Amino acid sequence: MEPWETREWYAEYLEACNRHDLAAIRSFIDPAVRRAHLPAGSEAWIGDMADLFHAFPDWRWRRIQIIVEDDRLAVHLRAGGTHLGVFRGIAPTRRHANVAEFAMYRVAKGRIVEFSGTADNVELLSQLTA
Image (cartoon, rainbow, N blue to C red):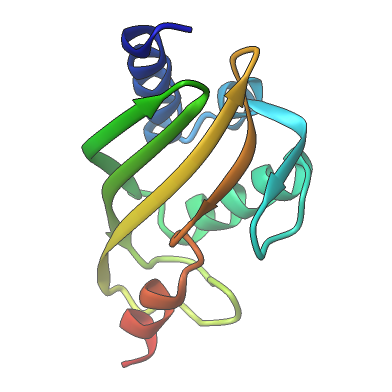
């Protein structure tokens, strides 16, 4: 893909995420996706997203910056939502959480095949337990 196509592709992915459309999100993820420090595979990815959406029904991401180089993307995002369901064993707090995320993706054939980044929920969990 050309850089402009990759940016458009990512905008579509982010839109699917913001709709909480797990079927659409799955279409952007390679079944064997590798995630640094997290379980691999699209089922694990979708499971993590489903848990997030259940706990934060209004969760949304906003793209701050995107850099595209060949098959790689570097993305800075802001994300947030209101904690209304159990998340990682923490009962609903009704707190609004707001986090910065930095993500690195490798894309092949229109699907994410590798991911690493700060979307590991450490900052999010600290806002729920502080």
